[in-house]
Length: 286
Image (cartoon, rainbow, N blue to C red; front, side):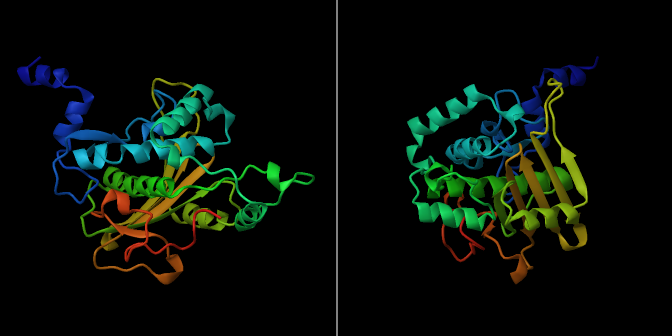
């Protein structure tokens, strides 16, 4: 074995990743990577279940400053997953306790009025179960900080999957548009079906050391290189779906596809707030 081979063996997986990917892929391609970011956040999964191959080069700001949002998003990803095979009660309880200790204002608001619950059921195309009172229907409201967490996750997914599948970094002038839905939301199901039918490439991620990994994370994507148009839809577990697209600097977004928009170099904490770059198609909460 040559000295170069021995040096290669000594390098950890993370060290090799940073050596081969020296630029942060999340903030426009101009900043050196100093660590790796797990996309989607590890908080979305029980310990040891983050999908392999979803580690990406990140600078300190993109990695560390978004950590609170990662924790919030991880909680909601678990909370809406209705596949019992994916549920780990101990991990989920730790997520709840972590939010209670560190970000109590990010927890869902449960004391909704009957009218608020009625509007939410209607917006999702769902019927109240026969014989059940509205007070017993489990509908909650999502606080502003957790809305931001969802948009942070979409933006990071867009940058990460684009980088993984094209080998290129989105520039600071690129824009990202995206939205989210629960898999059970009948009103938004046509949107998910549209992306699912349109996008040709499918990836289902696993971990090689876990035999029964299940369908914890998968995505579809499409890339039109001549137009630099990239679109994707992601499913985390059996509850949460996130979709989006990248918009080149010289292109616009057609009105029929209106959805929240932001630039790659926007500050992370501005996502989800009203701005010239953010044009919500519809509110997230009732």
